[in-house]
Image (cartoon, rainbow, N blue to C red):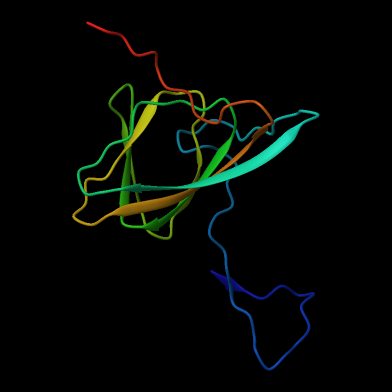
Length: 132
């Protein structure tokens, strides 16, 4: 969907603003929640996975927003449920369920993750490593 912000003055160089997403739930249907903290921190990372690559299992103690920059991302949840996204799609990330990212495509996958957290609070938690 394309729209022009009504408050923008007319110029010779018109901007085009493309709506990416407007989310009220996470990718698994949970509510979007805002963190209430006296020490807010917004952080962002770009994650790159080669074809066949997988992230570690993870969960997030803070809300996160994902925008797929390149390729395709499969999000696999602990119960086996999978969601698929491609370049140009965005979503609010589940932050209370264990999941991992998988690149099942033939090209590299990159996404931008923006986390809305708190200073000193990690944005990603991994399960404890066990030694056998």
